[in-house]
Amino acid sequence: MMPKMNHAFQSPELNLLLKCALHNHQAIEDLANQPAYRHFFSEKEFLFWVQRHRLQGLIAPAVERIMLFTDTARAQLREWAQHNTMMALSSLEVMKKLQAFVDQNSFKAFFLKGVGLSANYYGAVGLRHVYDIDIWVEPRAQPHVEHFIRTLGYVNENDRLEFNDTQLRYLQQGAHDAIFLPSTQGIQPIIELHWKLRDSLGNFLFDPVREYNRLESIDLGSFEIKMMNEVDQFIFLCVHGADHGWFRIKWLVDLYWVQKKSSLNWMHVQQRAKQLNALKEVELAFEVLNSVMGVETPSEFPMKRRSWLQRNQLRYIHHLIAYKGVFCDTPWEKLKNALYTLTISKRFFPSAELIKRNLTNKTDWLILRLPEPFFFLYFPLRPFLWIYRKLKN
Picture 1 (cartoon, one colour):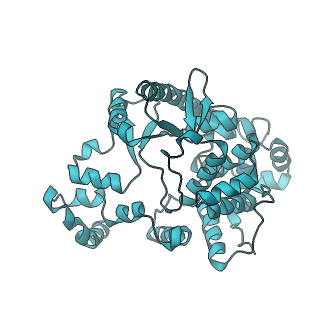
Picture 2 (cartoon, one colour):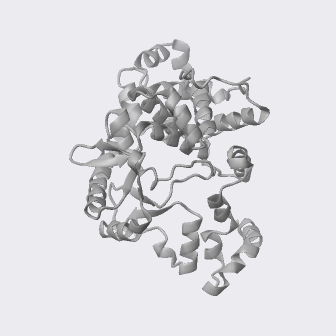
Picture 3 (tube, rainbow, N blue to C red):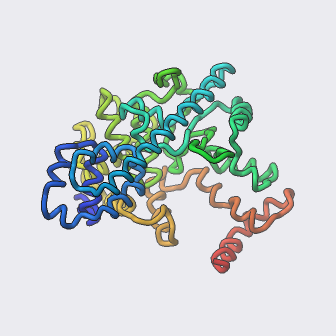
């Protein structure tokens, strides 16, 4: 039994958005030509969902052939698409420099998602929304790559906060990457330097060092990068989406284009997902794809009668996709996300990364600046600092 679909998916705007994201041109034209659809359609609402789900690069070419939008809206969509293409080209330049640096120093490194995913599966670097560059590097390379990133004109987002060594070490234990921001204005991507793969669920067993030989090379024109092979890529995208509750349609679209442009052996995907302890995330991803986009599920992943707990997981995901606010922007949304995360986490228990992230964090440190030897006091003071923030707000 499937949970009741969120009524927002039946709205003219989200309905059209989903078809545009898959570039289903016949379905787009059929929908747009219905008089009742045109009557209830809100151009402003549609543009909101385009931004909310970060689909700017895909939507403009998908709607060029339908007479549903005003010239102003078409110009806005084209402007967003052009900006995304410029971001993609800027990312390519930065990625080329990063790849040359790790190659010169024989460091193990590979890129996650991003422009490489777009080039390899979408067919063009500017179709997938570009925001940042995610790169994993082996532990010994971390300080060297960080220094090189700074020479490119980037600064660590924590530099301005003047954290001490103990705080910086704790940040590394409770996080999976360091974020670097461009120091100058312009069209430049953020860089996220990973020392491990994000997995707040505590399930994904992919070890980049051990699995390094399974990576594949992706040709980006003037240079090559390493990325996960198509099977591991698909599984990783399922885990990443589940980790975020599938808050953005962008991540579902990734799965659609990966399976459309590759020759995945679904039995192999199933076996590999079991090996990586990610089978339930893959099964959940297929249910979301089917219920939200109508994508047919492979026979190797038959729809099962889901438990009450599993139905509520899917109901929460539907809610998130149709939610108009910011992720976890209210206490109620935070509670729902915490419950969802627990139900899908390994043994219904949060990962070590997630626990450390919530025992204390830089928000506490900025409110109360304790001397480095007294860092341990942040743990018992955490509830009081939380109350202080709430009262102050």
